[in-house]
Length: 61
Image (cartoon, rainbow, N blue to C red; front, side, top):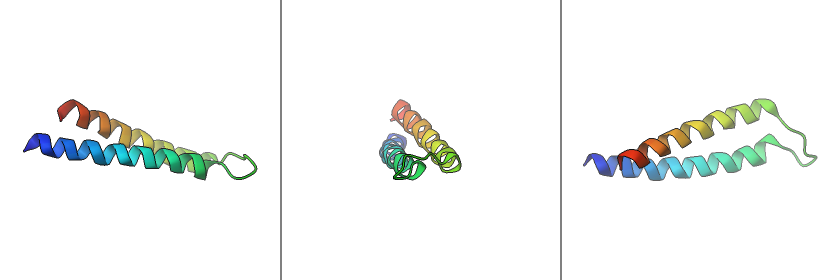
């Protein structure tokens, strides 16, 4: 039962990590190539959280 929960956490965290990374790329830069630090920090923190959850899930699944 516990392994199923960690397997689900692994899948959700991986998808969150990928989506957050894509959003980081598209939201942190505009068409002119200008960088927005506040948006980048927000998405960077989200990326780190999902990545950490993904690793935890992989270790326990």
